[in-house]
Image 1 (cartoon, rainbow, N blue to C red):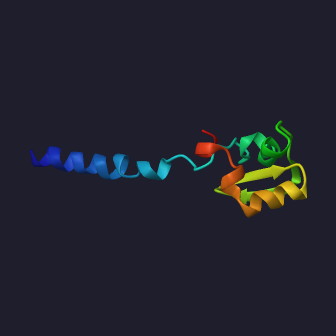
Image 2 (spheres, one colour):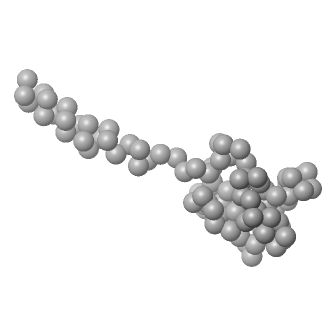
Image 3 (cartoon, rainbow, N blue to C red):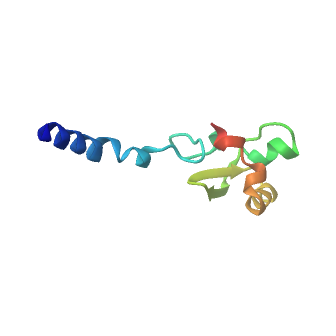
Length: 91
């Protein structure tokens, strides 16, 4: 009985307990770390259509890299990221 208890404790300690460390990022991103595949999230609100973001207008927020078509969109996002980011982290 004691051996089973020790085994169960060992399994829990090394396999089950660390699982929260594997939790998903708060933002859905691709393998390169880009949110919404590098598209400008502000453009969806301002222009009503998808616009590809540019590397020179990049901003890191919520463990993801966000790209924007121009500096104005970048500044709008910086001022209120929650307003322009996809709901539920894009999941």
